[in-house]
Structures are given as structure tokens and as C-alpha cells.
Amino acid sequence: MSASETLYIDGRWRPAASGATREVLDPADATVLAVVSEGGAEDTDAAVEAARRAFDTGDWPRTPTAERAALLRRVADLLQRDREEIALTESRDTGKTLEEGRVDVDDVTAAFRYFADLAVNTSGGRVVDAGSADVHSVVVHEPVGVCALITPWNYPLLQASWKIAPALAAGNTFVVKPSEVTPLSTVHLVRLLAEAGLPAGVANLVTGPGDPVGARMSTHPGVDLVSFTGGLVSGTKVAAAAAATVKKVALELGGKNPNVVFADACATDEGFDTAVDQALNAAFIHSGQVCSAGSRLILEESVHDRFVTELARRARLIRLGRGTEPGVECGPLVSQQQLDKTEAYVASALAEGAVLRCGGKRPEPSETRPATGYFYEPTVLDRCTREMRVVREETFGPILTVETFRTEDEAVALANDTEYGLAGAVFSGDTARARRVAARLRHGTVWINDYHPYLPQAEWGGFGKSGVGRELGPTGLDEYRETKHVYENLRPAPVRWFAG
Image (cartoon, rainbow, N blue to C red; front, side, top):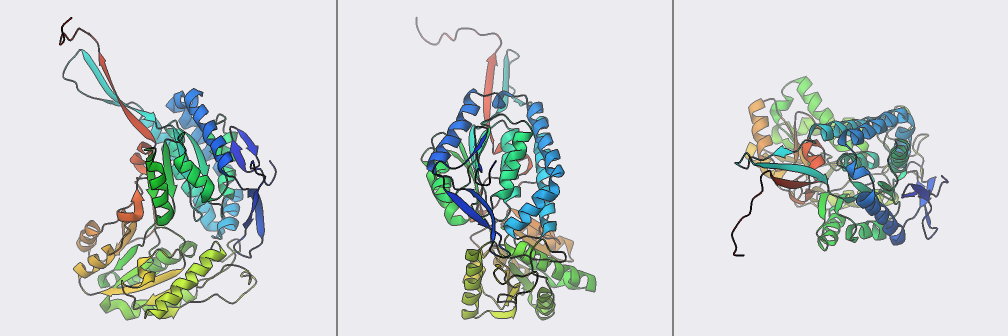
């Protein structure tokens, strides 16, 4: 496979039909990292048609569940074999640290193994009591068909696995379109699927932009399901496009996530240190380019001054640099566009009255921070209010806003005052209070005294404009299955309702 042959259609690597290519840039220094094919509508049609043939006439949908699961486990083993190579690719492509890349590979491995086990354990169907010994009635699961999978740039490998693993486990075929900004790890994953023995046409990959590739996938009559992870604006367009042909749709559209810290969580030195550390983790991991990032810190007023002072001190100590360098804790933003957006959000916040506690600018260049890289200092903005744009909108950068509350009811009201509802957290030394507040939060995932862990066994979805659908968990497999009711009369007889 040459550098520009990154389309995988019907079991063959090929260039784009137009011959177009795109340079993938290293965000740490803006140099060219790779050259990939720039697919278009013609390539997308070819990929969908290959997936359609493989589903309608191929063996994969009718392959026994145990055999499909065995292939997923082989893929998991291959991921571990290539762990260092893939982690390095993910680090250089997205800007995240090498250690974060390794964690991503391990999480992807766990997802493939989880869905392999889940498919085997839920393949028996469900018997429905028809009230007669002469009737056998059962609800069985079947694959949806051809799945269009559109993934984001921040966690390209992880998000691809959350879609590809359950789609294959259920017996579907698919076309995947990674972000044109960070496509490299998805190309590697598709190579591993082929190496594991996946039949031609089952997995198809088109590297290219959202328009026309993603748009065509969403409207193509040969597609049965669209799964999209990305921004709200693009997600609404995908949903509208898919509605014309009544496709199944799964959307994960990000969030603006509150991290609520009560004063009693800081009653001891250990508790205080833990809450500060978790606030940093919530906001600044992967430079804040995380849909579940705790970018809204909501502090009880009595602990505000001490907490924000320490938070800002430690944020200044975060080591910025190329993600592959030892000791680096935060890498660059993914692109010049994302850097520009971050600078604009900070500028608007300051203009609207926010108080800058740290950050707010690009760092000085160093040996690990080339001047041409897309670096931005971890930024803490204090005295923020709900009316500010930086508080309302998903910034996807290293920006943490601070709001305060006095009562439990006020904390809940602030945390729920968002059009999103993806994730949030509560820190409290009072277990009853923490659980009570967690129960009142309108968010798809709520952590108590922790931030960011996820379990493959638990659903991942959201309320409000964070999307529809539940990836991961038992229902993650259901997103890629249809249900069929089979009613069998063991002793058929005439109905005799009509004359004749």
C-alpha cells in the first residue's frame, strides 16, 4: 500500500477515483506527517455498494456468532501486538501524549473483547409466552445491514472501535469515515481487520472530508444506519439527511460538562488535594479536546478562593510539549483552526468580564514546543457567569471556567443549565448528598468523587443536545441490531373466518 492508497473498498487498498490527496499535519510543529487519499462521492458510492453486496450476498451476516466473536478477539490480540506503533501514530496525529495513546489502544482492545463476549452471551433470543403449547414464539436479533460510521478527530481510534466492534459483532457490514484531520490510526485498524480474516466488502474505509463523503454516507439509499460522533451542527445535518430514507441514527454530539465541588469535599488536606487534582484532570487531559471534559468548574463559594488559587498554581506547572517527549503532560491542539477557536473563546470571555487566573496565551517556544506547533497554555477563567459564551458553548480546548454556588439547589440548577447533557461530576464528603445531587443531574454519565473513567460495560450517551443512542454497554450492541418476532404455529389449522 502506497502512502496515498488509504481507501479500502471491497477488500482492496486504492487511491481516490479523482487522484486527490491530502496532507496530514503533525500538530506539534505543523510539518507533514503523512499523505492520504482524498475520497469523494464516487468513492463513497463504491464503498457503500461493496458493503451492500457483502451484506446481501456474502457470508458475514450468516456467520455463526461464535466465529464473528473469534475474529474480534483476533483483532484485539493484533492491537496489542502493534500497541507501541499505534500509540505513537495516535500521539503524533492528534497531539496527545504517548502514554494517552497507549491507554487508548488498551481501551480499544478491551472494547473488541467486550463486544465479542457480549455477542456470544446474547445470541440466544428471547422466548415469548404465547399462552399455547402449540405455538413457539421467540424474539431474535438480526444485523441492521450496512452501517455508515463517522468518527471525530480527538479520539479517532477509540471512537472507531466503539462503532466497528459492535457493528461486526452483530453481523453488519460498514463504511467508516475518520476525520480528515486524524485518519491514520483508523487506517491501521482496518489493516488489522483484514489481517484477522474479515471477508472482503465487510469493512470499507473512505478517507476524506465531511462534505462530500460524510454527507453522501448519510443520504445513500444503500445505508441502513448512520452513527456519527462530532459537533452539534454537523450532527443535526446528519440526522436531517438520514431522515429522508428513515435510517437508524446514533448521534454523540459532545457536551458542556459541569464538575460540582462542595466544600465538604475539601474538609481535609487529602480531600482538597484530590478535588484540585481531579479538576485539572477533568479540564486539561488531551488539552481539553474531550467531549466529556469537565470544562465548567462549579465551586461552593466558601472554598472558592483557596481552591482557585491552588488550581491556577498547579495549572501553570503543567508541562506542555510534543506528546512523544518524556515528561510532557499536555500536547498541542489538533490544528490551527482549533488554536484560533481557543484564542477567540478566551478573548470573548475576558471581554465579557471573566478574570484570568492563569494561561490565556500561547507558550514560549522550547525544545519540546516548536514555535510552529499549535500549543496553548492551560487557562483558568474565574468569576464566570452562565451568560458568557465560553460557559455556554463547547470550547474543545484547554479552558476551565469557574462559577460559584451557595446552596445545593443552586449547584444543581447551575449544573443542569446547559443545552447539552453528556457528563458531569459531583465531589462531596457527604455520601448521601453526593448521590442525591447525582440523581438530580440531567447528564448521561455522572461521576461521584472521580472524573473521566469509563467502562465498556456501561452505556455512553447523553441527554438534551448531546445526542441520541447509547454506545458501549449491553445496549451498544442493540444499536447495531434489529429485532424480529418469529411466531411458529406447531399445529396449524384453518381460521374459518371467511366464507368459501
